[in-house]
Structure formats: C-alpha cells, structure tokens
Length: 89
Image (cartoon, rainbow, N blue to C red; front, side):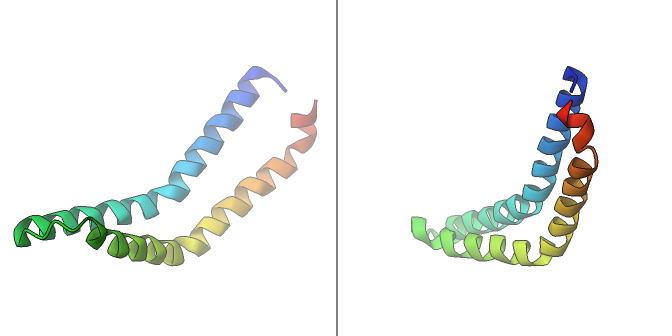
C-alpha cells in the first residue's frame, strides 16, 4: 500500500464520518439554537431545559437517516473488502 492510497483511504473515511454525523449534528444544533432563543425570550435560564429536546431531535434524526447511513456504510465496507488484496500488499 502506497502513501497515496493510504491518504486517499483516510480522506474517504473522514468524509464518510462527517457525512454520517452531519445530519444528527445539524438537528441538534438547530434545536439548540431554538431552545436558546426560547430561553432568552422567556428569561428561563434552566440549563437542563435544552438537553431533552436536543436528545430527542438527535434520536429522530438518527431514525430518519438510519437507512441512508447503513447504505453508505455497506457501500464503503464493500469497497474496502473488494480492494483488500490491494491494501494488503
């Protein structure tokens, strides 16, 4: 395995990680911003108030995106196993 192949594989792995984590992070961020605005408007400064909605939003995002995430992971794993002989050199 050459350095270029290793760097390419590392880049693909990191990009896949960002793609898979992105939707859940985005949902959590959006709900966090909405909860912060709501707390600022109502002047309720309870720190635990924002945790439950964010956790629920991340869970819902995971359930919505799970089939797509599994498809991406299976495709990447198939690619890795298909090129295993090349990587083993």
